[in-house]
Image (cartoon, rainbow, N blue to C red; front, side):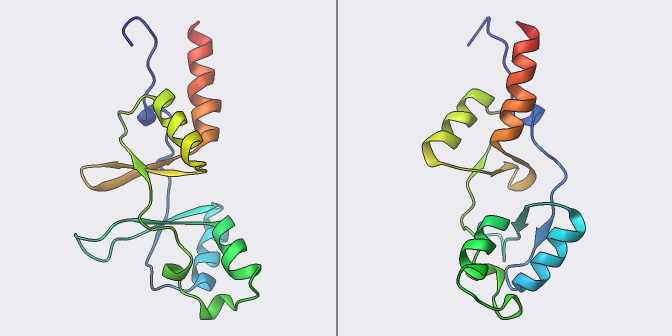
Length: 137
């Protein structure tokens, strides 16, 4: 891609994210989601051989609310997506966007050195990344 403006995921990712333990209840997750005004929580690894999980408000709607389950009786690990799909912060936003389209993703983690450093969504890819590419043209 020489000669073409390149924007990496690092330039558009959100670094303000919140974590939760998989053993927490959905009730606990909802309190955190509301207090932090977010729609996504990163689920911590249990140990170094585990993988990160991701909990979206839409997962709670689908697996708790729609199923009429009690949030205080459902654990995060029962609802979360695991392993979470993640990308490198150095990935070009064009490739990241293709990944989102191919797998119909709404959010991915950004991982560097086995640590989550942010999250990325189609909104940030388009509104921050594509907008910047267009401003350079």
